[in-house]
Length: 416
Image 1: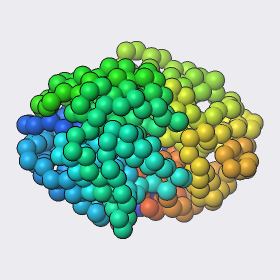
Image 2: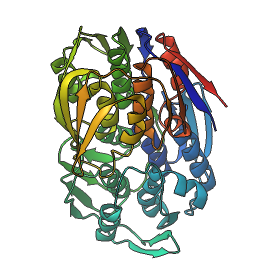
Image 3: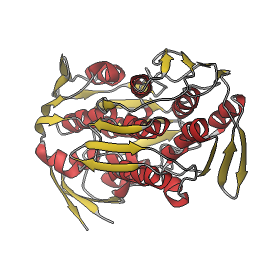
Image 4: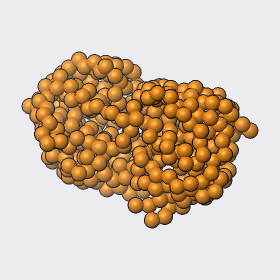
């Protein structure tokens, strides 16, 4: 296990190219199970979640090779039993259920793990697959599912779950007949999966809207594809520039994917110039406060909530942030308090952040991916040295964060 050592109060600046999206790359890797042949996926980030998913795919019979952010997959014969320990370590592993049921007619996968950020029920995944004819039971923490042939169905979600939308989409592409998903999640990563599957020969339309229609086809081939830019990574580095009073340019960004964040940052006083796939941000003399609620896309993303709380510690007045997606996502507040923050938890799902406060370096420990990013951002704005342990969580979703922040002028190092 490693740790970050950060000397704060360095004004960041310069240029940084944003990587491909973690939350798209993982699902495209799984979607390849539905096809046959050789795939090339470009802009795949070097993060531990991708390495774990490679392990899952290899155990299922896929040959994988990742080199210089280019992933090669060879899909031929498959088996449906996912490795228990790998599956338990990453929530995205549950996405293999839909493709393997559709392709093989059976799948066995352990109840998944991942970040401890609250209750994330799988009932929408399971009920959707059941409506398509799957028989699913839980045996000793193992989901065992069977279906001779999945059938198209009209499925309505009570909540626009990203994972369930993706799983049902993938199951439906080889099902008999048409599947309609209502109240579907609208995230850009779901549009990316639609484009990927359609380039393999699927017939899907409507991704990015609340209603997705999928007409089943007999089989799918292979494709070459480039992952969309990571909107959460882009948001994290924009906030890093602001919390240090800096300015800089991010390249390989789709600005329309982070409109909700840009609106908040402009309201705080940031000057942001948008040019096609680049964003340039300039910090104001003083950041202003905000009131924000996280919501499913196109609302403000829950995966940027902890980072925005860190930024609010440097804004003038009291900022209010409400978490509308996950419960238990404020567990990192006690760690931030070690730097001298003034944050009050209001009930179960809101915080009031007083600023600006003088943050002073300390020792902290990361408990999950995005909380870890927030601790790093706060440390960048703190006086003196901060040590952050538990950075294996950060490595799940950010490629070489210390190198990329150093590129912007941060004094950060990774130590064993």
